[in-house]
Length: 442
Ligand SMILES: [Zn+2]
Image 1 (cartoon, protein in one colour):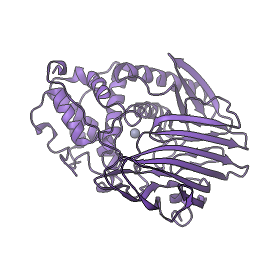
Image 2 (tube, helix red, strand yellow):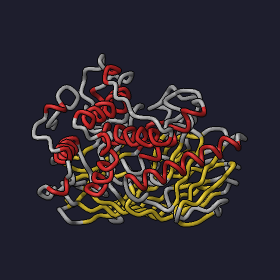
Image 3 (tube, rainbow, N blue to C red):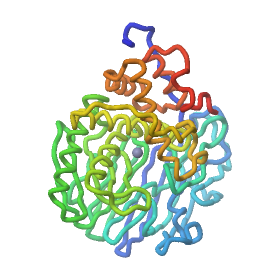
Image 4 (cartoon, protein in one colour):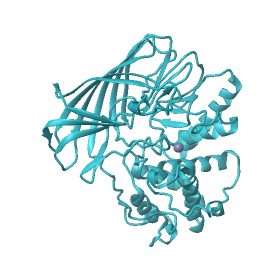
């Protein structure tokens, strides 16, 4: 059980294949139209020559033609695309932006891509959305896909789950606002209230999130050198305080159990879909639902905070291995609640007896109705069962710490996770994973 006595375990990281540095300017006018000038330095770190680059361009999912069901769709207009300063050919289909390279890009070579475009946010979009007062810019710029197995790893957009996978990147965002909104972002440098213009930096983060809020109720607290800020969009000030308290306890617990929180600021916005972004979480509702009740909202905040480690620091492809961030974030949250409420964890795999699929299928292999039951629910239940059967319940916390130490700022997949877990628990076969993990999937 004690991994220190064994031969040293050497973690393997899945290579991203592409590397990017983003420099983006964003200007918002009084009517809510955004003008973007995005310049990205992209490096080919694969072994293939590239004839084209493939980006996620998610704003285009919410236009009138792609989302006819929306009463207020987004407006998106690409003004120009340049490769190393020269006008380039491109195609845009749903959220897939392909840019042709007139000269092939060889391994270890770089190219500069400039995309100028305008957009408005849809109402009732998904993550990339606006409501009466506030604007939520998730995945709002062209994000380079990862490249692996000799192809671009870009899957079709889906309305459930996270269908985009990006590598750790550096960002410099220059913004200018004309409305009286405050900006909250993935950068550690946000102030409240924010300036009308400025530059925001974020390094080694998976994407760059921005929210623009109108007159939020803001409270904050310092935990060591980390500032937690809660942005309430209603007048339940006592409840915002409760959220700040539970978030502080969760942050302390996760730091002690897993490892250091990766940023200096943790912003909690109590509006929109429960979701994690680097340095920011949003929490108010789940897919298409009305706002959840106060207790559910607290546990949603805790879950999204856990993602700052399992997504934010240890990366995984959320399309093909969603259980690795959702399941482990749920596992860590359950450990937090067990000590927070002084309760023991009782494993009950019976809850999932009618769910006979493995937990690590790709998103398109689940029915939308059952997807979450597998990737959030069954995954963590079965993981607790493995610890219980190996008399290692007391070590679940230690496991998370070792996991962090081995995989921080790396990307992991199911096979590698199982390899690590087997090493940690001294398992010499795959019997524990029969029936709930699909081994060696391509
Ligand atoms: Zn989650």
